[in-house]
Image (cartoon, rainbow, N blue to C red; front, side):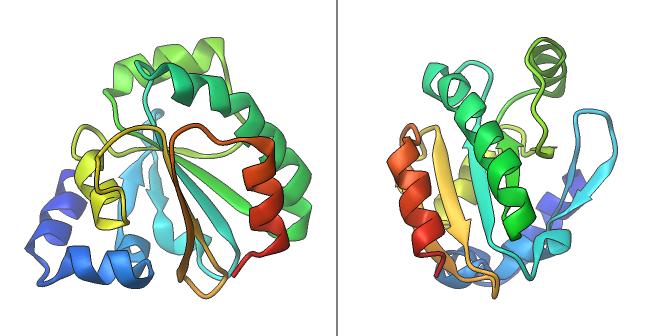
Length: 159
C-alpha cells in the first residue's frame, strides 16, 4: 500500500482530480486486512458506495450492519460497496473476526484521511461516504452516519 500512496501523493493536482470525479481514486490499490491487494479499478463500471470508517469510531461501527444489508440487497442490481479503514490492520482484523461484513474492506491506514479529504471530506471526520456513478463521477457525499433514507435516495438517484 505504501507504493500506491507514494505514487498518489506525487501526482500533480491529485486531490483536485479525485475531488472532481473520482479521478485518481480508481488508480489506487489497497491492501486488505488479510494482506491481499484490492484494486479500486475493479469497481469501475458500476455504482460504488465508498465508506471511510475506523474501529475506534462509534458511528462508523453503528452503520456497518446497514451498509452490509445494503450490499446484500443491492449487489444483484450492480451496486458495489467498499469500506476503507482509516485504522491499523491488526485492529481491523480483530474487529472483522468478531463482526464480519460481506463487502470488501481495504486498508487506507491513517493516511486515509488525506484521501477522504481529496474526495470532499473537508472536515476529515468519520464516517464519510462517497457514492460514485457507474462512469466514475462523485455523485453523493455524506459526512456522518448513514441512514436508511440516504441509501434509498442514492439508489433512486445513482447519478
